[in-house]
Amino acid sequence: MKGFLDRSWSLALVAVLTLLASGCASTIRNDVTAFHEWPADLDQRTYVITRTEEQANELEYNNYENLLRAELARLGFEEQRSAPPARLKVRLQYSSSVRDVLLIQPVADPYYYPWAWGGGPGLGPWRGPQGYYPPGVYYPGSWGPPIIQQEEIRYKMYSRQLKVVMTDARTGRNVYEVTVNSDDTKGPLPGVMPYMMRSAFQEFPGPNGVPRVIELKMEKVKPTP
Image 1 (cartoon, helix red, strand yellow):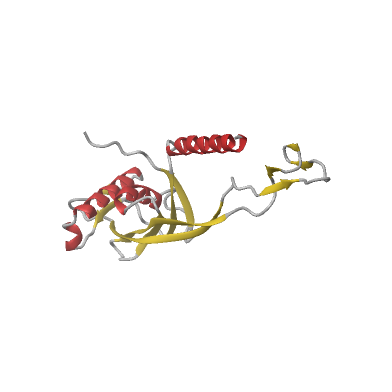
Image 2: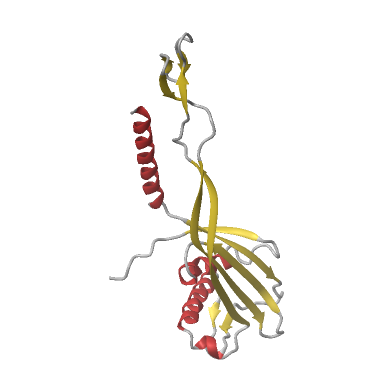
């Protein structure tokens, strides 16, 4: 009876901890690498976004382009929509894929205990974990290997990449290239792109050619009424 109560209490505790964990804000990790070589005479931070004809007709691309504009505005860049020509040309590329993953791992049952025979005729009581037991009585022992079972875990792994390139319009040389890779189970690209774009310009321009891991707290999206 005591073992049953202990197990019930443990299962209840696990349920409570799971509930508390689900209420905590999760974070997303992005692998970021930036290369930059700013010209000494870059006295104006004006830019124009260049795109392919196919990109111009994609609603998804237009959404990501607006995220790019917001980050550049935060850094003090100004989009040049008319003459004179902008000093920088900016383009973005992205890709994503998803694969099904099957994980098989051994799991031990923590509530399994082998049973031991409590003494015998002429041997006297048997000393067990809970005290002395008279001969002929079974009691739960505290030794022996646990039961090992195979557990299958299925999930989807998402791989995403974002690349932003800034080019000096006067010379045609790239002055900033950043690549952001994100691999996790947090869902398709649209829900993660805002954090990838923010990571691309974190501590801009950032260390040159040094891979970094940037963690950002994910915000809960409220459903549209």
